[in-house]
Image 1: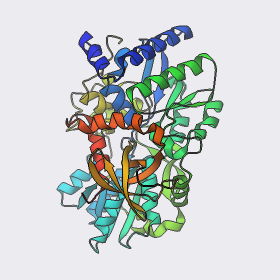
Image 2: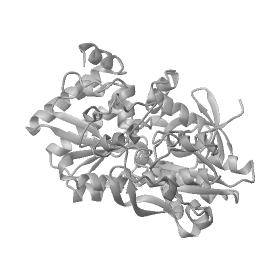
Image 3: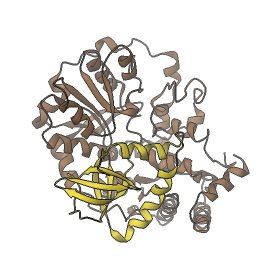
Image 4: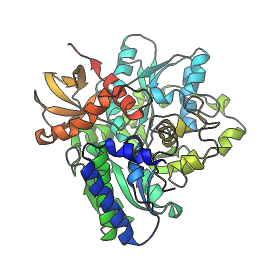
Length: 379
Length: 95
């Protein structure tokens, strides 16, 4: 925005010389492609946090768009999934869940609303803490679990570690690769390359993306979270686009391998199966949801409890939520600042859409780090 | 929620490791890490579970960003706040 922003951003780099080299390379590469804009998508809230926090967009060439796709697991948790958690809580079942889930709006209520009506909703940071809560009492406890494959692995490990009989899981876990498929098939998104999330790839391995890259003729680069890691990954992605390489590159080799973490994958798929399911604002993603396998029915809150969400449905959406653009933001079609509610009716303390709720939501990240972060006059 | 944080293993008891994160000692589960973990190794942790043993040669580079974030105390800083949440996901360890 101001000249001061880009100066400030540069100071945040540990190696400003290297950052300058990388941004100069980005400018040269975009120019050599001879078209504008060139759109690259990342699918990780932590990448967006790092991009915004370190002011990386200030240094990008104007013709390069780096946008966030469906990379916020809380944001894509569907209304009907929130309704299930709220209904259970209102039925008197004690719920444990990750912090960002509490304020997430359902059809008519959030878990915070249920809590205000007397329901027991506990915030935990890990599945282990949810199990500890269950152990400390005889009361049924449902762990309302959200998160992508990285986080689902922790839930799987808990399921495999013989939790107490009063413990069960309401899974809102999602699997990212099918959502990348969905975005790649959207012609209007015009994504020319993907940055894959580093810590999800620690689990899945980068080999998982090779077939995707070939089929969609779209390169994928696995990126870390250091500002310089992200810039280097963007350079690699543009080089692959220039050279017509439709493969996968690993720009985060210190944490990611081709095979990934086999033991974690084994736990994940022993406990969960991928099923078609709704992602908020996006629609049904084939194989996008992680559901507990039949074998673990006793630990599956959906099989264990009769969950009646009918009282929570509303005939019509509120005027505000009709104007919310979260769905389009999450597939990269528009930016938070294109939404008429952003920073006005929709704020972190009174969110309308899911993207303003979670610390990994695009809107909350943009709001928190200063509106449209560090676009440095490129808008 | 897809952030992992690195720490140094200073104790192991079965499937539970005691890990030092930037001076804070915490318990971390070893259920899903895919390589044998030994004292002195660095592991990447996510929501209370070690998900990767970080090769020794790569440790320093990985730690820099996180050490910087761990020192940031601003609640408005979402990246630093998520890192603190990751630490909170591990169990209190013995000092």
